[in-house]
Length: 184
Image 1 (tube, helix red, strand yellow):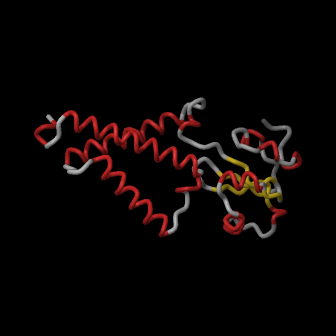
Image 2 (cartoon, one colour; image 1 turned 60 degrees about the vertical axis):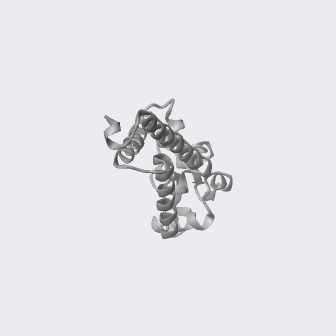
Image 3 (cartoon, helix red, strand yellow; image 1 turned 90 degrees about the horizontal axis):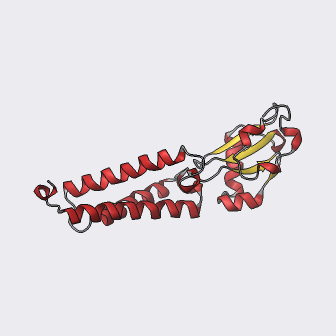
C-alpha cells in the first residue's frame, strides 16, 4: 500500500518512531521549562515555535518528504495529541502530560519561590493583576498559575472553597481568613 506512494514499511516505522520520540522530547522540554513556555506568546515566540515546528517536521519526515510521509507523520502526531488528552482524564497519570497548578500569590503576598519554580517574573505577575482590574494587592485573594499556563486571579470578597485549591501546589500557604472553612 505505502509502496505506491514512495514509502516502504521501514519508512513508515521510522516516521512513527521519530514522531513519538520528538513529541516526547517536546513534552519533556515544556515540563522542564514550565507550563508558561507556550501560554502567552510574543511575535518572537510565535516565530520560534513556527521554526521549531518546521525543524521537528523535517526531522520526522526525513530527507525526502512525500505526501505519504507527511500523512503518516501528521496522523502520528494527532494520535499522540489525542492520547495525551486521554491521559489527562486519569488523575493518577495526568502528571505525565500536565503540570499541577501552582499558587503564585496568597492574599497580598507574592510567593517568590513558587514564582521562580513556575518561571513567572514579578513584572508579569503585576501585568496580570492589572489585566484583572486589581488596583491594590489588598484586593487579591490568590493568584494561580493553571496547568494550561494561564494565570487566574481570584479577588477577595467571598471566601474561597478549599475544593477549588485542592490540586494547587502551595495551597497550604493560603491565609485561613480567605478560605471558606464551612465548605468542602
